[in-house]
Image (cartoon, rainbow, N blue to C red; front, side):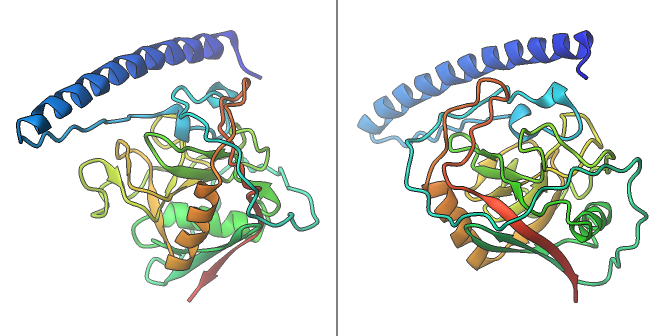
Length: 274
């Protein structure tokens, strides 16, 4: 249940971030005007928009995080490029504590997401993010991700597909949290999570990741507070592009999620050691 204090903090945070978004939008428009003027003078002006989102990548274990404080605009409805989900039901089991750390840091691990839109293969970073990879190995082995929807697609500011919540609301989690890891990964430069990165969502607090994660389909500017723990294969990126090209739905009035137009369901998730 959401306490009154949690609700109060959520509303305050949402109000603050809406104000920040309006200010950022105004600065962006001003930069765009300046860029036009400068180009007429033969001067190249490079503007940057730092979109620091919290709600967009929040979700695990707390309904306090049900609303995305910065919700990108939805894109027009497109034809669903994906197949119907395999028969089966999601599992919503929870555990009281993080599973015992048994991952082999010296070994290579891969995760396959067999989705309705195609297979997404991910090379996992066991040595750099052992707790995260260990957790995914555990959850995948329990069938936790099977038949779950990828509940959010962002198409403006940042470009990610978010999955890992069996409830499909952005509020679910495995009942335990894992520590932040690998936040100084060499792939993260100038607060950019490059296309192909797989990283953990969190509640905005340190060490609050659970089961929700996001796959970056286009370079996205984010603060380095989301554990990067994998890289999508080339063929997997083609699947992500197909999903992204189909666009997102209007924001849900309750959760503020912009769900993908494509029916993205993880039929089966497996983690393999090699």
